[in-house]
Image (tube, rainbow, N blue to C red):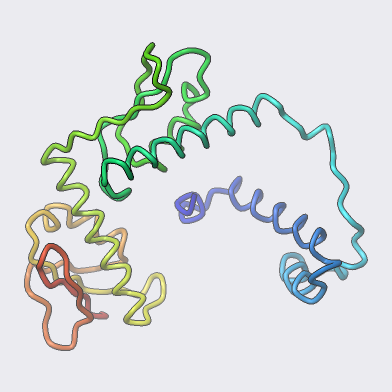
Length: 220
């Protein structure tokens, strides 16, 4: 996920590098110039057209892992379908997702965290029922407030783009929503803000609407 790169996860960068390295070699015969430019930007060595076509290495195959990943993707897909049926947007957190018990890949912390992040739920529970996947779609006030905070973060990030700001450019946030003000530290961290003012944006601010309320940003 994007957050792994933000955190500087070495494994994520290594996986991305290897994926791009092999992809360049695979697409070189049909996109020679694109493949060459990308390949040289990766390591600055010899031409991709001198590197040879990649061959599959059967020793890399992990059938158990492939099965687990396939199952996890199916769970995420079904959960998203249930969200759509309930007309609940993905940015709105839910309390839990339930999956059928047994020898389940989601009992592994990595896959559990992946599903919780993708489906945006607080926890995973296991049940003996026939249904493969169920979602708890009851929305407490706490969950609704958290969903609103996520909407505010998304809107502020869109405003940064509209203002032509680069990642890391400091801003002041103008947002009179009480729920957002209670999550001030979280919002400032997500949006590279140094100040959060619970006031209507001043003239000249880049603005948008949330819950019929005008919020905005100004560059520091």
